[in-house]
Amino acid sequence: MEAPPVTMMPVTGGTINMMEYLLQGSVLDHSLESLIHRLRGLCDNMEPETFLDHEIVFLLKGQQASPFVLRARRSMDRTGAPWHLRYLGQPEMGDKNRHALVRNCVDIATSENLTDFLMEMGFRMDHEFVTKGHLFRKGIMKITVYKIFRILVPGNTDSTEALSLSYLVELSVVAPAGQDMVSDDMRNFAEQLKPLVHLEKIDPKRLM
Amino acid sequence: MQREEKQLEASLDALLSQAADLKNSLGSFIYKLENEYDRLTWPSVLDSFALLSGQLNTLNKVLKHEKTPLFRNQVIIPLVLSPDRDEDLMRQTEGRVPVFSHEVVPDHLRTKPDPEVEEQEKQLTTDAARIGADAAQKQIQNLNKMCSNLLEKISKEERESESGGLRSNKQTFNPADTNALVAAVAFGKGLSNWRPSGSSGPGQPGQPGAGTILAGTSGLQQVQMAGTPSQQQPMLSGVQMAQAGQPGKMPSGIKTNIKSASMHPYQRTLD
Image 1 (tube, each protein chain N blue to C red):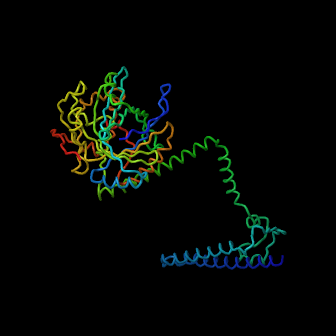
Image 2 (cartoon, rainbow over the protein chains, first blue to last red; image 1 turned 135 degrees about the horizontal axis):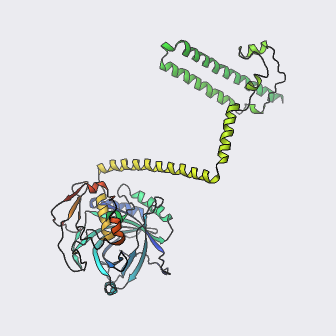
Image 3 (cartoon, one colour; image 1 turned 135 degrees about the vertical axis):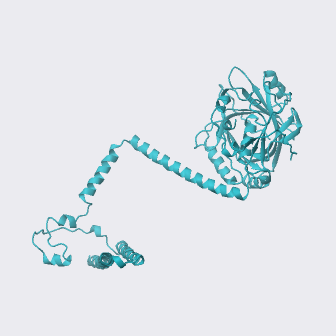
């Protein structure tokens, strides 16, 4: 996946300004073509973009009860692309007036020795997976349709197997905090994908 | 001036004749109800209603006609009130109003509602004025909330029945798959089946435990959720642990379909 727009705003005084608004859904393999077709019609006119990424999730356990999680991503089909380090905060469901899940988010492009750096800092690898799919844009909205692959032999991205017979569909917007208006646009867009895909705000906590 | 008077007279005549028609129809309908109720058929009652409704419409049309002067601009003043019997009046009102006295004039020349109605209206107005702006605002909000809740419920019901109908045609997505995929990207559920329980160091392939297979609504779509709770242990700490204790809100489709099966890795070629 292409690195999302990296925020140029400095992270000052411990406050993180950017929020990711997220809606999720899935589509079965045999309906993927219709979804891609519809997305090409709905989204900005651009060359169809695909991605093949390897994501590693790192944990840092400190004194706090919950570990600190960082996600490192690298592109497997684009050599020379920077690694992508991402922090995601606790997701907030919010009330029904806000139509998307919201979480803090920090995106940074890094060099390829990111893994070593994190390990040196005391992070430990928690899990990893490979994602492969399509990327669409509409204005500031980003739509990804991708398959998740389990890695059978740790560290070896050549031997993988699909997690399920569906593609995960995500509609996300990264915006400064408080811009809940974007969730309205997202809802409208999600409506246009029905009944092919139902994009909803899914609280991951209830899936633990 | 004269032209206006003529117009007023003409429209009054039209009004009178319409009112008379209406009165006749009403009279005959009441007569029918009172005297022929035993052999009255429903269609004939409907006919009478249709006739009345048509005549009321015509009356309304006459009143709204652009050539009809505004009757409210005409003022009627009782010049003489007398307790004596007035034969002319008796004749004109078909025996209903025998005298033009202080007793009947307020009723017949009234331009405002009944005193009782007026009293009720006043009561309502004072009630409304007594409620503070805040309280009123609250009440409005409550009402709006109720309405929107109701609307949401209705539209949800509609949506569900709609999507239910479509699903029977052809399924394009599987909610169980959605949940499995979201859980996988959110906290690696089902991904790290090689991670041994206890130590979570990388590069130590562990024994895959007994997996559970979540069967979707259709028999073909299976989502494998490898990873026993003990393997998920490293993730379930702190806040997340506390959340895990909550009563599950999983869609019933998943909960009821959990089957414990002897593990066979879900081998599929990648596409």
